[in-house]
Length: 180
Image (cartoon, rainbow, N blue to C red; front, side):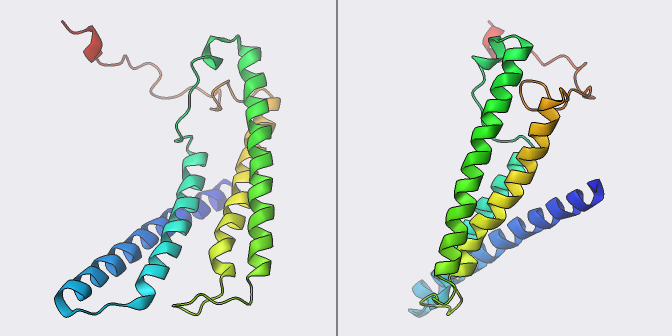
């Protein structure tokens, strides 16, 4: 199962890179065409926007899995371990609720817009809204796994595994604030 998950997230990373590359080529190409030849590609703006939306949702999934989102845990860190775990469980339950809202809303929009075509490309608008469905379902799975681990006591208060990290023994470099 771990191998399947790893391949899934490798695919997501490749899709994010692909979306970025397509966006750069289309936008740069359109700028050059407008300024040099007084013309442009009409579908460029629309597809760039679609790639951006997909890139944001897929990038958010990758960041969720890698715990790379910004967090403010100054209050939670001061709590005892049980308080940290309670906050972790509550936070995961709230995030699961938001994922459900995103999935439900995106699914409804995809169904409504299944027969609606985009003005420039002619593609179904359901493809645009399905980014939210992919995000909501995938993020829910990630959060459910972490929630189960937290309830079993396998996650600490900051959402990371209690397994020892290979870098825990390293002493941080001198802090710039402590320098004279």
